[in-house]
Length: 170
Image 1 (cartoon, rainbow, N blue to C red):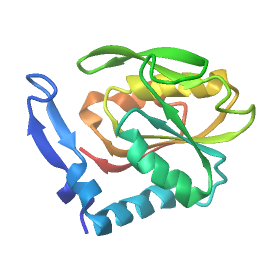
Image 2 (cartoon, rainbow, N blue to C red):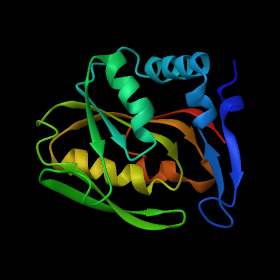
Image 3 (cartoon, helix red, strand yellow):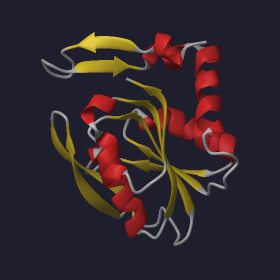
Image 4 (cartoon, helix red, strand yellow):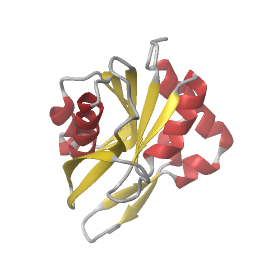
């Protein structure tokens, strides 16, 4: 099965000039979704993971599945003012703007082994901000894990100090 066959291209979303990679067909197919999860888990080579950090919002889908499969906790990283408890924040650049991300201050205990997951590695700004949040709280990043990577945007360069895995590369 080719996971790429379950990714739909949407031209000019969220704004003109962007080719959006839509994962909803993948989410809708239980067999493709399961195979994708197996690929993401296999990339960890049986490493111990204490918590999975999922970036808002599409990183939540497979992030939660990974946490369940790995018997790990799940930490949502959200946009500003979406978390109910005290949070730390980091800013980041997107291919089409800038924003901030937040994580609860008690989400990670020092030394916990962390898997960071998001749906796409594009410019690397989001992933870099999430890495900063994890390290501020004392977490050890085991891997930055992505469903897909847009290699032409060179996002890997921003997080080159960490192990990186992408199930699909464009």
